[in-house]
Amino acid sequence: MEVDISKTYDELSRKAANVIADVLNAKPNAVLGMATGSSPLGLYQELVRMHREEGLNFSQVTTFNLDEYVGLPVTHKQSYHYFMHENFFKHVNIPRENIHIPSGTTRNYRAFCEWYESRIKSCGGIDVQILGIGSDGHIAFNEPTSSLTSRTRLKTLARPTIEDNARFFDRVEDVPIYAITMGVGTILEAQTLVLVANGKNKADAVAKMIEGPVTSMITASALQMHSDARVFIDEPAAGRLQMREYYEWVQAKKPGAPAT
Ligand code: F6R
Image (spheres, rainbow, N blue to C red):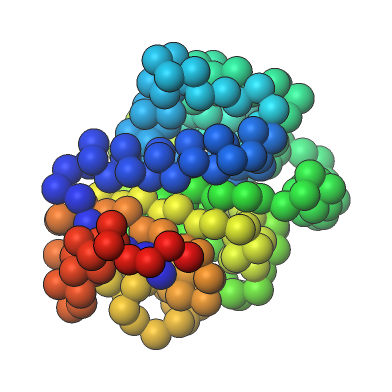
């Protein structure tokens, strides 16, 4: 796992966006895995800036989102469909038919999940997956004790997640209890993982993800089993890392490292 600690949220967002831009420049028809929530907002803003000012081209890109709340129509302001449209898709040139977001309103969740998995495969798999981390250590909506081999499926959200996400709703009772989410196994199949996290309230989960045991209690710890997982965090989110000095040393020495 590569751990990159930035002074500010803007800096970590820029660095994470550069990874995505490098993938797109090398492979214009890349398949991107998208995340929602507050963590990747800066990354999306930077990609939009690169699209407008530097001509970063998304015209051949295909996307798959990690998750969606069950029961919210796509027009609901807290649905992840709405979030993605407002914060990213409407600002770049991804063909509409190339955008995939789990359905929160399908009549047959099992069939939809199977279709979603097979669609990822038929598009060639995900080249780079963007991730955030929940304060309980989840990735996507893979709550503690989710199988580390899980696939796209319906999940019941944990109470801490519902309470964390209540900030986006009028009342905590309005937060959906169920979600459809890619599994940990689905996520681990992406070629590259880019996880962004900022703020003190993520410090505990971040430390457990990077330095704790691999456990379904912290599903983000499964990133330790991936051969190209890159974690971009700010100083408050790095606050509980024991090996921080080493990560900073590695980053400082990176320019002089032999090319691989
Ligand atoms: C959202 C997702 C979640 C969030 C996590 C952190 O698509 O998959 O795992 O990344 O809950 O959310 P924020 O970034 O709002 O703190």
